[in-house]
Amino acid sequence: MMQKIQRFGGAMFTPVLLFAFSGLMLALSISLTNPILLGSVANEGTLWTQFWSMIENGAWTIFNQMELLFVIGLPIGLAKEASGRAAMESVVVYLTFNYFVNSILTSWGGLFGVDFSQDLIDGAAGSGLKMIAGIKTLDTSVLGALVIAGITVWIHNRYFSTKLPDWLGVFQGSSFVVIIGFFVMIPVAFLFCWIWPIFQGGIASLQHFMATSGVLGVWIYCFLERLLIPTGLHHFIYIPFMYGPAAVDGGIVKYWFSHMQEFADSTKPLKELFPEGGFALYGNEKIFAPPGIAAAFYFTAKPEKRRKVLALLIPATLTAMLVGITEPFEFTFLFAAPLLFVVHAILAATMDAAMFFFGVVGRMTNGIIDMMTTNWIPLFANHWMMYLTQIVIGLIFTCIYFFVFRFLILKFNFPTPGREADDEETKLFTKQDYRNKDKKHTPSAESTNQYATQAAAYLDAFGGYDNISDVTNCATRLRITVKDKSLVGPDRAFKQGGAHGVVRHGKAFQVIVGLSVPQVREEFEKLMQMGIK
Image (cartoon, rainbow, N blue to C red; front, side, top):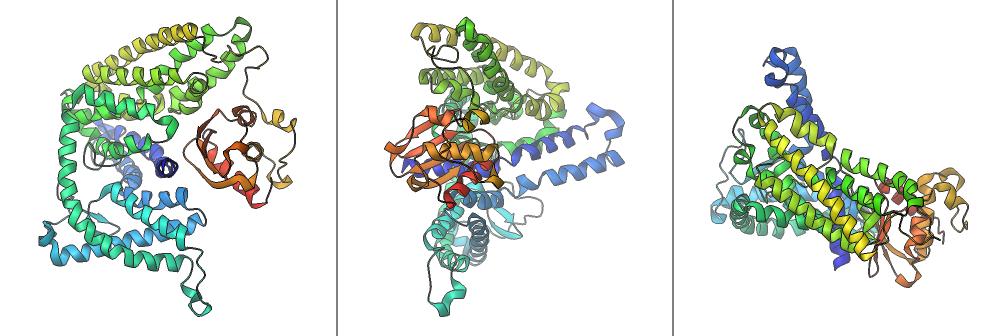
């Protein structure tokens, strides 16, 4: 069951990758139409404003069609075969579901306590309703989309390959999946019409609780978001808040961009305007924690290995700070000393909670580049004191990270980078290193590239294609379920292929690859199809 939950969590992240660019474009276009920043050129009606308003409208695509994005993205990550067809089936079944909901509430809305006569032209805020692909329906947010997509993927994985009699051959494959989905959606639609209005009342209560939970609520949320990263379950923590209704209608990300101009113009404390922004502070540990941890690693490394340690940590630290990709950095020490990861989660949550206590809120979920474009630059004029507070607290915690990690590493003699045994070299292995080892997995000439080489190394470490029962991935990890875990090699075998580490949970494995994991997975599956052992 845990394997399935982890796989579902990883698949949820597939569409989230698209939000970063849209968020940056929204922040840029909103900032460049702010008269406070640019003066009269940004006044309403100018050619400059009209152009950037067009850019802003285009950037809203992802956020305004969030449900469809998750309906498409989930099957790509979860379908065992023909993931493209599974995505198409998921969209059709989801739209069918919403048409059923529309018809049910049009005829019997009163029986379910839903006023379906409301006009949504001016927005659906507070109505519990929404327009999705031109269909007036319940606003089930991404949660409803995930449920319907999950049902469709289950049908796809079970019935897509079903062989029907020849005279019914036209109905097999995707048609058969959609046919089954059509009839399944009838009771599901009735169930949603009955349960969801009640659930919306619970969501409203949850939103109120989260908005008033204060420092403790922020600490618990940020602690769990960081602590669960190795398991992949952290997606279940932040997605309902950032893209779902757990804290505010429409999710924190969409709400932030919708009100960013209002926040920028106001002189009121941002914490007063948007207290829910306390649940979007976890980008701070991606900026301020890495330099402290890296310094601790460097100064506790053996003198003769410090140069190699520095070469290893500088790019990982800069990547974490600038763009917020922390997994390659965190897994550098996670496998050497898991206790340090727990300490990291505690310190990160404490830093976020301290910032919230002193009035820091916003949409701070990634690195410096995102932080500057979506927070510091557009809101600096009226909220510079808050950002100064954020930076001061962050730098204090950088020092805390250094002293705490240095003390623990020396106290418990953790084998962090540069402190390994003398016969273990401190390095990240290259493609040439792999080519010089046993060529048990030789990629085909037409696919000889870095990704194919990595994939071949991992397939070898997993015991060959016939030991693989399932393959998927999330943002930075290749997720594999094997048939016989005793055939899987040690972590060293994966690191020789360029992996940052391996998470083991029974027959479920996660290879920490990095942002190139989609390309590595593609090459991995090519090798499996070729029957390479």
